[in-house]
Amino acid sequence: IPVAWVAHAVGVVAADKLGGGQQVNPSVSVSMYALGKISYTEMFVRIMGSMAGGLVAFPLFKLFADSFGLEPLGGPEFDPQDDEEGIAAGFGEFVAMVLLMIVIYVVNWELNFGKAHYWIKQTLTALGIRYLIETFPRAGPAINPMLATTWYIFAYGEYPTHLGHYFTYWVASAAGAIFASVLYVIYAGGTCFGARIPLGPIKGGEAKNAPESPKKKKS
Image (cartoon, rainbow, N blue to C red; front, side, top):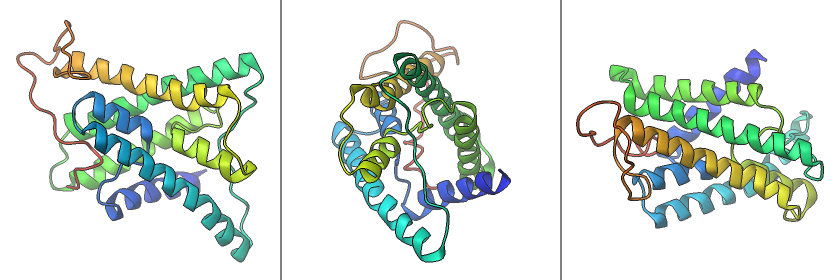
């Protein structure tokens, strides 16, 4: 387990640093768009870029694993035809995404770690993601629509055909991101999809402009 946690943290930090602050989670991009941190076009491009990356990554890792005799890579999935399991999986993805977005908001916009801010906030984000993966296992888990869909395409050679897949990994996940965005606006002020919410800000006074998208800010 410690190896998985460390490897996950290193991968998250390295991907962000080497990629120049990309967003590899479509639901995160949806939240950043809802909060006005990126444009619709940028959201679309980032989602398409993450999907393309996933489609390339799974075959590459299989080649790597086969070459070095490593255990084959698995991916997030569940039985979408089991209604009870599907509902539980969707609810798990929703809650996990709400909590993930709260972690992202807090470590990127509410805390300041000084000169080491980038490294600390990225490490905390990575550990938060890993904790949520371990805590909400019902959907595989994914907590990332890109991972779930590109894994399915890689594993079965076709797009998912059951609506349960899209409800759990895309609808529930995006809904969680939007709900978290609303909560953040209530707390810090600002707008959600360009509209002000008649609650808050809890922070007090006129909300300050939050920094740019956490995936864009490098230091």
